[in-house]
Length: 272
Image (cartoon, rainbow, N blue to C red; front, side, top):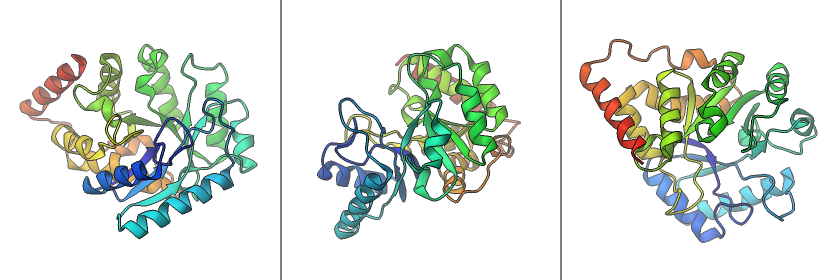
């Protein structure tokens, strides 16, 4: 599996704070079947100076060297969680901000938490028109998206990929509102990627393996593989993925027990 949204790079944002924690997180992820983790730190955090793309690249290279020395079978790729700003495309073109994996044409974009900006759709459309693949980070966690699923449908129709967080799918790990929104997006076949957004070795850990098992039980092996490996791998290779094609092989004539199981999972998650 490939986890395209992680905060494994230590000491740069609200994620891990030391190299030892990074090693423990990578070992945990590898034990779950994760082979690649993309380090996607916040570019701006608190009073810390915004790091450059070159600084991120060096930090990831150092982290990979440590993984190899310790025998951890995880490859760390550079990237960043890019804030949705009016000048996003220009900053990418100036190599100030990085794509996922720092080699393809896919970017992980995080909207502001307060409200959807009036320039949001236009900026994302400009990225798509310029040949970028856009992955929108954890939309199910935003209050304005929870009440405006139609906006997310419009973004997917434009070609934007939605990345849902593992904790939003696993019962008891997310707020009821985020869980309800995540499952509604899954039911509407709008999700392209599931990633951990891991920040720690215990709290907000990498639980992609647990989420993948849940996806296999409720949506089948094909969808579980696509959301945790197939689509992330294609995006890192710079391949274009049509959101509508991801769910084309999803079962349409589901047995009664699968529908019941999904309803139970949704209820358990809503109860928090």
